[in-house]
Length: 266
Image (cartoon, rainbow, N blue to C red):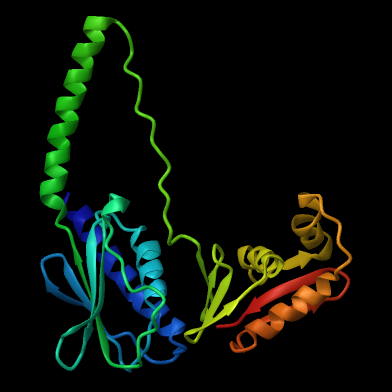
């Protein structure tokens, strides 16, 4: 099991660097470096940056949840954003496997440009894992006894869907697209989208750098809803272009005779 543990730890550290990378992009910085990730304690890491940055708490929470969901034993952790000068806590939150135990506050408040350190402490997996093994073995034994006595299968528990409020964020280059609240966050500035603009951008976001036919856009936006309107699709494309203008790396281009394409350059 040692080799597997080492691999999981290495994968976790790569994901931590990815968190730093995306925070810099969201801050409008695509050139400075994420410094080497430091292991500051048992199951505790620090992400440092070459230059000062700003961050939006909503984006930080969404980015860490999305990326750390890809690593094992990372369901419970505490994130603290520290000021470099005195290690005071500028912002912090806690994520739990049981979503109702999450502690998240002060969303929507952009933090000033400064030198920050992202400190992430994970819950030790050892005790929990061992405890779960004993519970699993004991539970299987009890189920076998009950099945033997009553001669009937035990019905599996119904798993309720988990409502994750932070899975509605899509990253488009340095732009953060909040699909649920129909908002764009560019360099810390929030721009509202109409319902139709949000539907159009959602289609583009799912097929970045791919040609989307006009007929598909019209069908998915209006025909599937049974609504016939006289408004031109070009008008909504034009409005989206203006709202995406602050990021020069994102463009909606016309592909003659075919449709449109959302181009995102590095």
